[in-house]
Image 1 (tube, helix red, strand yellow):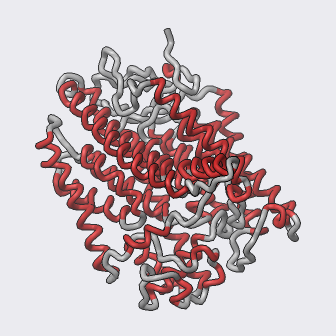
Image 2 (cartoon, helix red, strand yellow):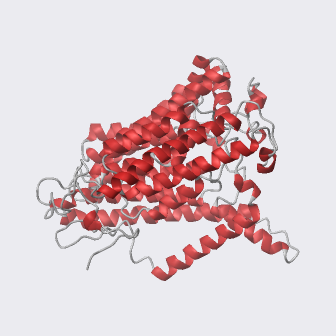
Image 3 (cartoon, one colour):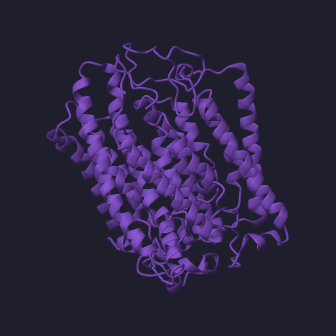
Amino acid sequence: MTRRTEDGDDPSARWGNGDGRGADPAAGRGSGDPAGRGATLRRVDPADVGRLRLVRWGGLAGAVLLAVASWLGGVFPEFTGGVTPLSIWRGEHGPLLLAAWLLGAAALVPAWWTARHRVRSTRWAYLTVGLWTLPLLVAVPSGSRDVYSYACQGWVYAAGGDPYAGGVAAAGCPWLDTISPIWRDTPAPYGPVFVLLAGAAAALGGSLLGTVALLRVAAVLGVLLAAACLPGLARAAGVPAQRAVWLVLACPLVGVHMVAGAHNDAVMVGLLLAGLLVVVRHPGQRPRLLLGGLLLGLAVAVKVTALVVLPFAALAAVAGIFTFRALLRDGVWVLAGALAALLASSAASGLGFGWVGGLAHSGDTQQWTSPPTAVGFTVDYAARLFGRDANAVPVTRAVAVVLLAVLLVVLWFRAWHGLRRLSGVRQRVARLAAARPRVALTGAGLALAATVALAPVFHPWYAVWPLAVLAVVATRTTWFLLPCAVASFLTLPDGTNLARFTKAPGALLMTALVLWLVVRAIRSGGSRGPLLPHFDEQGSPATTQ
């Protein structure tokens, strides 16, 4: 019987060589190519050539429309406040703006989705993504006003102030009117590495325009660093490199929010993938592991979210038989490097660990796109039917934090036990060499996914965190690609978040989804999980897992 993946594809037709020419999926077994290097996702037939041409140019048309929409009504420095979709529609360019934005997203998202199993080669993926990115490089900042917050925080630091001591309003930032009011009086929630970058951008840029331009350069460099690391990570895990490149870089969230929006998440993701690549490629080599830990620590010093990856990176660092002693011998070098990066960057900023206090304000907004917040909204709605005021959001958020802590521990121990199982088999089957980094990287990706799902706040660009890691290991992709596709439609070019205007229906739908997932998890009993790969009789990882 032919096995099929979750997406309904025949795995026997999904593997080929790096040039896009068809190859036997069994090729390479026992031939010194345990990681499946050079594998592609699917043989390219004549029908695919036409579809891929449509994908490339249709996606480019979508990117151009998004760039046009940004110039018609993107996140310009002038802030009017109180914007709603209806007021945008009634504006000077309202109908054209919304039409260009929605049509652009409607072209870009399906193009990315359609080609996810038909990428011809890594080169084709890079060229196509490069074409899509060109219009967005010259777009007005879109989807969020965060880049102006970065600029003001950088100005405060460059002027000798402490962006962790209070909001930019009290510090006298001259660009205060560009920032959403909710963030004017809150301390910076970012780590010292990004404050140093923002301060350098403000000092070198001089003006608001120059500062924003340099912040976009930093974001683009982060995306380029991620692009350079994706093939190596994918090959180490035995996954087609071009598929990983496509899933991450062609995702509309990357172009719109990382490139056009200049979010600092791009810098974090680039450093994160670079650190993981160094660790995965050099297990047991202490100087290289220290370097990998330093890169991971720099990622944490941009956004603290990267911290959840460190325990899994320590697992990936172990060489040879997997024991607790080996973990202490090798994994401690990764953790030491990360700690050194945090201490050094905190000292270099001259602000110490004041950035930790700013994290408390990252959940000041309340939107149904965060599952814990949505459940809290739903409980509040139900309580009002009985004349009560439950104020459940803080409670559900606190429960989610506890649940996240427990889930991270469970994921780590599952990865640990999976690697212990593999360490004995690896001596007999060379093909399993790719399984060890895959287990550790899968754990890291799932940890990021859990962090995003259980965080008190969700913004569309957060979905890129787990996407960047899961894309290099997962054979089942729909479950994490679909949220990215939906999130691509959540914001308008001027930064308006549509979740603000769909609070009740959105909260109810999200709560229903959470309940469905809980019931499904209970029924499955957790007997099978992605951290415990299944192998066929030749020792090859099963394509359906």
